[in-house]
Structures are given as C-alpha cells and as structure tokens.
Image (cartoon, rainbow, N blue to C red; front, side):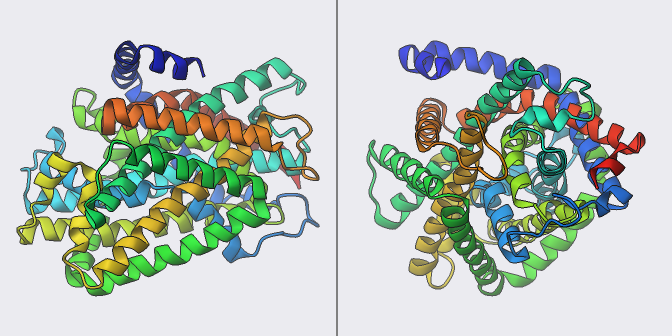
Length: 487
C-alpha cells in the first residue's frame, strides 16, 4: 500500500526507484534463480519415485472432495492465468528476432525459430510447475497431515523445532503477500493489454479510459467469484475455461498450419531436452548475456511471485489424494498442457512470420505484443467467432487465477482458518482485489510491458528465498525419514 501511494504521489521517482531495484535483482541474483529453480525441478522428479509419494494427504482414510477432472481444471486455470494467452504468440517472435548472443544463432533464421520453440517449453512447462508444486505439497502435508495453521510458515515444519513462532509466521506471510500482489498485478497487466488489444482490433475503438474500464471489470469479476466460495465461482469458471482452452487449441491445430505446427513442436522438443542442462543454469553459465535477465529470470520471477500463496490454494484442493497423484495433477499434466498450447500457438506464429508477409515482428514493435494474436486470427476462418471467444478466455483466465489467490490471500490475512472453516471474510478479499487492480493499472500506464517485467522481478526474489528453504526442508524430511510420521 505504501508503494501504491508513492507511485501516485510521484510517479517518475517511483518508476526510477523501481527500475533501480529491478536492475539490482537482475545483476546480482540471476545465478540464484537458476540454481534454485533447477533444484526444484530435480526434487519433483526425485519424489515421483520415492516412497513419500505413497502418503495420502489428509491421512489414510481421507476422501477427495474433488473429482480428478475438477481438480485438474481448477489447477490448470488457476496457475496459468493470462500467461499462455498473452505470451504464446508474442514470446516466440521476441526470441526469433533477438536470440541469445551466447547461442551464436542468426536472428530470423530457421534455427532461431526452432530454438524459440525450445525456449517456450523451458519457460512454460516443467520448471515453472515445479516452482508451484514444492510449496503446495509441503503446505498440504502440513495443513492436513500435521494440522498446522493456514500459513506459509507451516511449510517449514521439518526445519522448525518450535512451531509457535507468530512473528516469523507473520513476517513470511507478509513478504509472500507483497510478492503475490506484484505477480498478480503483472499478470493482470498482461490481461488488460490482451483485452484492450482485442477490443481495439475487433471494433476499432480506442480510448484512454478503455484500460481503466477493463481493469474494473476484471477486478470486480474475480472479487465476486472469490466471495461466492471455492465450490461455486472457481469450480464453475475453471470448468468453462478449461473447455474453451481445449476448443481454441484444437481449432488452431486443425485450421491453422497443422504440418508446420507439428514440425516446430518436434524441433522445439529436441532443443528443449538437449539444451535443458545448459538452459536451466543459463544465468550461471552466461551471466553477462542480457537475454537470461530479460527472459528466463523474468519468467522464473513471475512464477515464483505467485507460487507461495498459490501453494495454499493448491494444497487445499489435494485432500484425499497421494503425494504422487499431487505431482501428476499439479506438475506433469499442466506442463504437458503448456507444451501442447505453446506448440500450437507458438508454432503457428513462427510459421506465419517466416512464410507469409504479415509483418508480425513489426506489429509487435509498433502496437505491442497484445496485437499479434488478433492479426493472426485475420488469416484463419471464423475470425469473428474465434477472436471474441479468445477475448472471453483471456478474461476468464485471469478471473479464475485471481479468484483462487484472493481466497488464499484473505485466508492468511485472517484468523481462525482451518479445514473445517476455510473461508476468509469478504471485506478482506475486496481490499486485496482493489489493491491488485490499482497496482496493475498504474504500472502498465507508466511503463507498459517493461512495467509488467519489473513487477514480476520485484515479486519473485523474496519468494525464491522462501521456496528454496521449503525445498531444503522437504529434502531433510526425506533424508531423515521423518516423512513416515505423516502417514
């Protein structure tokens, strides 16, 4: 709230201060982002095959309150937000036009396009979802199996001898609330740009008030959804959104350049798996290259900013399922969906850019990344159906993701939250919703896409430290064999 007031009182000084902090993070902590996220990926892979995977969340007799489809649809739609919609067509163009210098690849070449697909898979699949999974599974075990409090402090239970540490709990929760406000505001900024670009493309309408109206609509919608409760708003919206995602992806696959999409997917997979060791440690191996700072560290920061608070929500959903099932539905399946989506939308974009004269790269620079997907829709059949459907998806994507996190934010800002009484007061959800909307609107109007990236970096660093410690606690739980007491 202090930062919000500062930004309104002196926007130039606020932006300058934010930029300085952002540059400090990129120049000094890139190595930690690489090392920490790689550790998370390896840990998730390890526990898939470890006996801890057999432990049932909530105890041996716990029964799930969500079907597997409901569980998957909620997990999917509350974790990707507007990210895959906004970046699915924009990000590959950036990588095509400006590949990392350490790769030695010529900009605009076929090799640059193949590498771009590999980078999409890097930023939107297994590493990002490992970032979500680790704190979420630890919270689930703490909340349901250990009966710990509804707090991120509870995820550290393997490392804390004295569990009653209210100051530490409040400090951790406060830092993570700040991080999530930054992360959600960054994603909301992307959503606002996507929606305003779509309205401008479909109707030709432009106004200085358009982004403000869109911000108010999104914020109002996810507040209303959060107020309705977990089993109503979130469940209904996620089910609708997951189905729309599927329809859009299949439409593009069959009516777009299908063969090119398949070819780019195959080459992207090859790049992804053969370069994964290098790219997962890219900020350590290539510290002077600006590309990792602009892209990989930015991506990890955005996921990390969401991860701690999202962990509270994802952990609540997992009651009655085993740890291994948790990883399947929170790590593997969403990653595969992200790979499929990026293959279709990224492959289509790269094919159009290299084989047609649409000028998508020029459009990206002149009108912004939000304009690219709507120009592509003009080349596809049923444009006037698909483009509005895409707009609806962009709207619902953020509403669903923000809904779940507003619920969790309200939970750790309240007292008395338990498995039997999981819903926080409405007024707290409203306050958080308004705060997020205000931060997002101010940043995209002051700094545009750069503002989105700065918000992500500012939110990701404190979360990185916490999740690395949570990761260490999980490994200690396994090595000491104390996980057996959780059964």
